[in-house]
Length: 97
Image (cartoon, rainbow, N blue to C red):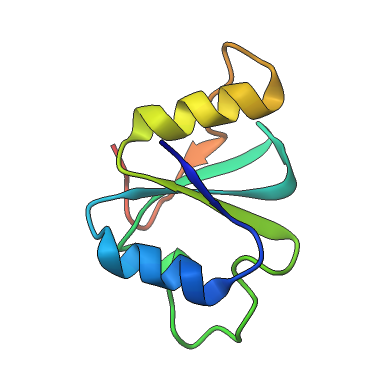
């Protein structure tokens, strides 16, 4: 099951700490398949402590987090009403499966 983080970087960071083997879908507030990037929970691109507070979930982007890639893909397909929707790309830094 995918969990949405759209207004609390603290809650988002706690999920990352509690689920190091999980996955994150980084997308805009109004999700589209043109920007839906898949990351591993441990990826530095989506968890740096040097980023100002609110930058991850309180601005233009939100995060969906889940234990499996399949859960995130199902969430994306549901949000976009496209049964064939897929991630726009996997992160080039963490190379999620």
